[in-house]
Image (cartoon, rainbow, N blue to C red; front, side, top):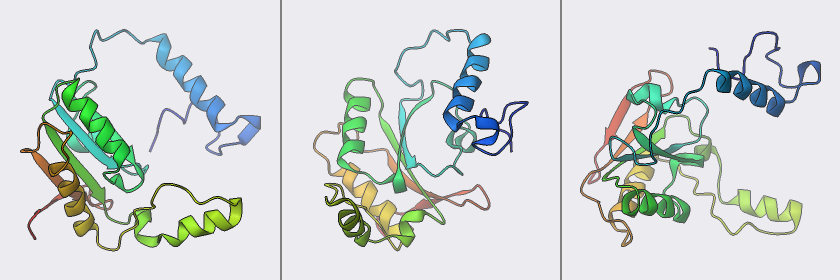
Length: 183
């Protein structure tokens, strides 16, 4: 698989030849900008949809969902969990930028399935301060999607809750499996 980070003349090793990953990405941006033309869009997504998904590098959301630049707002974090910050982003997306639908995407083999809230305690032991945030680890991905849907549907700041759907993306097949919120 080739990405913008894999430029001709660059090794696939992040620190090869003294290049840092960041330098490689900045170089990739220079190449991108050489042929960039302003698409003339504003920040309002054409499809009026916000997608909340895990940050896992295996998820190419635009390709998996057939999306183009400008189609959606994409909000990503560890696990695709509906946290206070996700609610903040969704609220701005809906109230200021016109989105009406919310799609939640978790995935198989998520790293949060192997963590526990002990992670916070381990961090506290290591650095002397416990993080204010929860890990939001889970054991059952389907149930976690249901919980995320419930958090969106019951939040008073969100205007549009009638089209909130949740899915699990299979990292081996690329298919989405819809989760019934009532199961």
